[in-house]
Structures are given as C-alpha cells and as structure tokens.
Amino acid sequence: MEKNKSSANKLTYTCSAPCYGVFVDYNIMMPLRDGVRLAMDIYYPAIDGKKVQETFSVILVRTPYDKTNKSYYRYFAERGYVVVVQDVRGRYASEGVFYPFANEGPDGYDTVEWIAAQSWCNGKVGTSGASYCAAVQSALASLNPPHLAAMIPTYGPSSYFHSSMRHNGALEMRFFVYAFLMAVSSREATSDPFIKSALEEAYTNIWEWVKSYPIRKGETPLSLLPSYEQWAIDISTRCLYDEYWQRPGYGPRFHYERHADVPTLYIAGWYDSYTRSSFENFIELGKQKK
Image (cartoon, rainbow, N blue to C red; front, side):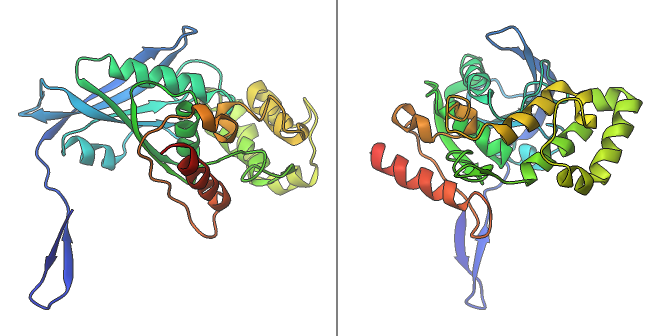
C-alpha cells in the first residue's frame, strides 16, 4: 500500500493494482487421511481467461459458513495469489460429519500439505479468516505443518475452556445457541424440509431452549442432527480442562511449544469475547518463538 500527499496536504492511500484476471475451479474434492473429501473453490491468477502457468503463494480460508461467492477472494487472485476456500468437514459441499471446532487440526494440516504439493503452489501457504475461520488456523498451526508460511487469525481462541467458549469453566451461552444456528444451515436441513422447518422453529424460539438448559439427548430438535446435539451436550457438561478441551481445535494454548513459528498477525476488538485469547496468543508465542 502506497502513501501519498494530496494537493490539500492530506494523506491518501492507494492499494496495489490488480495484475491478473481470475480463473476459478469450483468444488475440487481433496481427500483427507481418513478418506473423507473436502470441497474447495480455487481462485487462480489468469490472463485472457486462462490460468497463469506459474507457481504462486497460496492463501487458505477454511470455513463452516459456505465457501461460495466472496468477492475478496478474487481481489487476492488478481494480485498474484492462489486463493483456496474450503468447506470444513460436514458442511455444505464437503463430506463427513460436522462436529464443531474439536477436530479441525488434522483436517487443516492435511489441507496445507495437499496444497503445497500442487503444481501451482510455490510451497508457501498462508491462512486467513475470522472467528471459526481463525480457530481452524490455530488448530492446524498447533500441529506445525511444514509448509505453513504465515497466519492472520481474526477473533480466534487461545483456549476455548478458559475464555471465549467457557470462561474458566463457565459456559458462554451463545455457543449453546450456536449449535441451533448452525443446525439450521446444515446439509441435512437443506436437503430435508421437515428437518429444516423443525430447526428453524427451534432457533426462532431459542430463548425457550435457553431457559430449558441444560438439555438431554433426544429432548430438542437438535436430536435430528446427532453430531450437533452431541457437541451442544459436550460443551455444556465437560467442565474440567482435560483431553477434550486440549485438542488443537479448541485453541493452541496446550500446544504452544510445538506451534508453528511463522509470521502471524493477531486481530481482535476491545469488546469481543476473543480479546483475552488474542493477547494470550501474542504474548506467549512471542516469548517462545523468537
């Protein structure tokens, strides 16, 4: 980004100009170590409608919120990056069962290393994204994939047990609500009008379910989606910092020692529930990764 002085003696900023067009491959299926395939849209720099036959650094975004139709992916491809946007396991076009957060470490690791092996990648993979899309960055970085080159986690966890999801043990109720919200947009609800209607009604009346907290298996419409229901029960009942919460998907705190040592920009807000987490990651990893 260039900084210039205008005639009125005010500073103006000019972003880098686009150098390429964009070519997109949609729904490329990438196999994980257990055989489940994750769907990706890949945005390539292009000239005259054709992919540029060179290697580029790659920006990876892993999301549970639908990988399609985000204009800023094109922005970076126009400026010389390949952008890979992936639906996480069990969401939208990806195969498998969605169980939020907990198992994102290995899936992210496999994705980074698969990208690095492609002919269009120069071996450097950076990650970006906010909230859940920040948590998946820390999850894969906790396993230290060899080709991770940089990260920009925005509003991400350090330990979901100690803050952001639970707060030294006490559950932040918005994550209980989150299970219902995500269920409405699930692949199962999209393909079954009965499930969709039941879950939409539950989310519309979410306060009634909050007042009924804690839930038991089979007592709410979440039982139509067993993995979503189980997650809501697990985060509500697992009140000790044990192996469950120490998995990379629930934050890098337990894994700082082996966490990837790469340039990282942590972004947070003063009044966001991830403020403490962002400072913890910055301070602790700053001490350990010189």
